[in-house]
Image 1 (tube, rainbow, N blue to C red):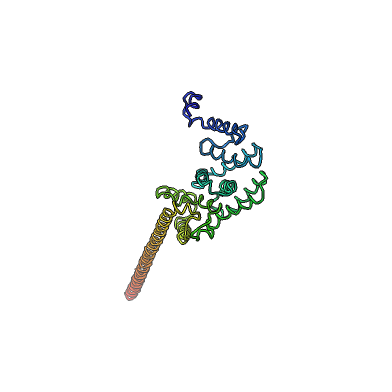
Image 2 (image 1 turned 90 degrees about the vertical axis):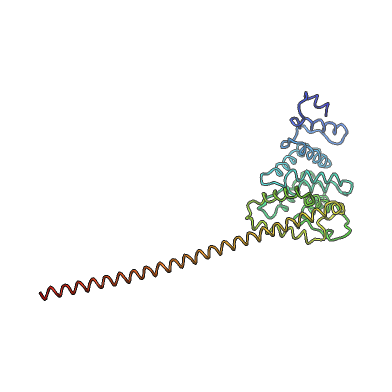
Length: 326
């Protein structure tokens, strides 16, 4: 780091991220771990994306030497995960998943399969669409075709991505002594935020609400509470034994807390709506009473007016008779 700072004449590293990246990739290339690309792929300027690029390049180089193709796919992945509707399911999310992947690397049987699933499981993410996972799988198949991936790997990645559309649930979630296969680690990486501390979990919940800002508050709370209830009803939130040991307890507390909060909010909104309806009903009744009283008053006025007119006519006739006598 000191050598690099001297090379850039003391300029802070934060202003020269790409330069540090090229130094790192050059060192990796000299050790035979990867090849240096002709140019840095567009779309990343921070160290997290640099780490993702290195992981992607290290992963994909097992299947192709076409650096341009690797750069294009990585750029496309970063563009997808940087879309404006994403507040949680973004680059930060897959970055955290890969950190967990690296932490449990020794426990994973087929690391490449898990990595491809991490990069593509939320490749398509439209909160208004019901088939994000299916579209993400289609996109992965396109990438697999370009990279000439073997069919067994493709099948396993598709299985992992498909599992995220079924509530992140497998039979292993109900087992007391799980086998902890690769798919279970992958699902736990995706749900790791559930076991975070309360502050981080609250921020996560707010980001999810932002992603579904188009949904009315009561409907969102009802649907979100239903999802939380599914986690509560499981024997275990996580499938792997490692995540159960250090994150299961926190996840239970966070999920139950959000569930109660959502139920309370729904009940409050229903009560407020009923109160509004009652007030509206009372207002309508008062209006009807006032209308009835007004009609009665008008009827009385008509009667009085009719009597006055009749009396005037009678007086007029009597006056006419007296004149004739005279």
